[in-house]
Image (cartoon, rainbow, N blue to C red; front, side):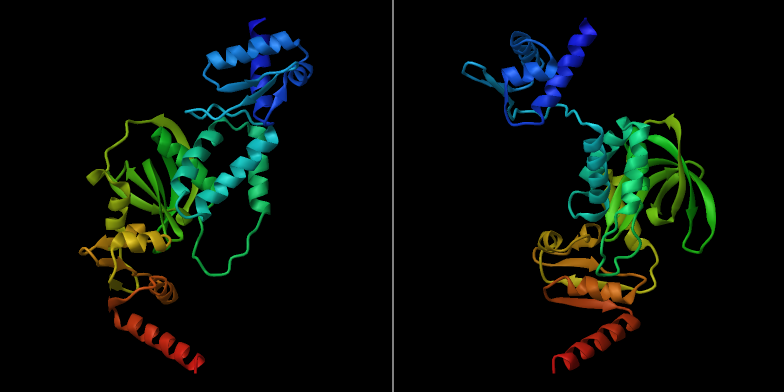
Length: 319
């Protein structure tokens, strides 16, 4: 009897989440109970903290109102698949919400039935978007989901990693944080074999395998994962060096330019340093062009030559 009542209340909650307002008679018909039973079940939902408003009248009406806390949402199969695909897309493509989308995706992936995971993967692989510019390698959404869960649960993970030199080796790590920098995603993790913090590009990770072993979280040096990763990236070798002194506050540039948060450093009240170093000369040019403010540049000769050639072509094109 208790299990029947619980199932009915969950069904009632699901119905309330699908329509702005229900009459008592409509709910009773859907649940195959009396209007009086519907009223009792509504009272039980209120006791559990759900803000259900009621309207006066012969039949009565009910709607789920906005409360101080977000109540648990009940999703059917199609809704769960749609949200999972949307979160995977948002995690790799929208500025400002990547980390939030990953946390939500980790929660959903944990409870998603196996029969639905195949649908999510199939949809993700079948849907394509038009890319108007070369944004570099993109992270696999399924890999993002796996790593997000491992970071949240502090679960030791193994995977194959291809280095910049092209060699591949197996790694065993304690995942800590996922960081987006421009078009690239990085995994910040503690390498158990080397007993040190390491940074792994997601486009070079293959065959991730959670081990099922959870460990206490390690504190990141400095207690700021993004700052720690930014320091590592600025110290990492790149083919072309380019550092701009921008004549604007760091917060001003950060708010107007996508993906540069980990590459900006305040240098004064109205100036900041931007490390635009990269392996690609066109990407350096696009990064600097996106600043939309004055700056001075300290860069390698090949960077200066490339930018001067690009400027001359632009001047000739404009007559």
